[in-house]
Amino acid sequence: MKRYLLVLLALVACSSCSSYPRDFREVADEGPPDGPTGAWQGRWTSEMNGHSGPLWCLVSPTRGDGDAGPDERFDFRYRAGWGMFRFGDYTHEAAGRMDDGVLRVAGEMELPDAVGTYRIDGTVTAERFSARFESDRGDRGTIELHRP
Image (cartoon, rainbow, N blue to C red; front, top):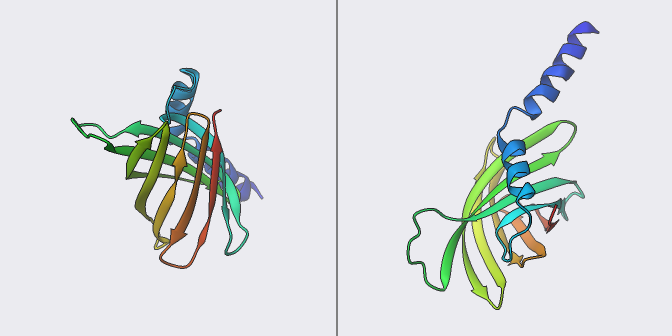
């Protein structure tokens, strides 16, 4: 019993080992910006198997982009939860195009542990982040985020 308690405590401790929670709080404390960048929180839901979990995202312009013109690059830094005490931090760069305050986003990222490659397609405004995801392994679903 003592061994299981130690494992549980280690899992809880490791879930906060990432710098993501601190970084998220710092950006969220700045308040929502006028555009699509900044802190987001909500849920992801798989249509394939019904799984879902909490999701946080930090959106920022890709550094070193210089004169990007109407098509810009953005970094999407996610923290996703699923199952009990399981979290993963993922980052992908996505091409975006701003049209009347709406950022249209398309991107892709390789997830670890042979989970596969995920593609995202959606829109981000100053108030709402709505997207669909699809993996090369057949998973697909939705992402719905709002400002913290």
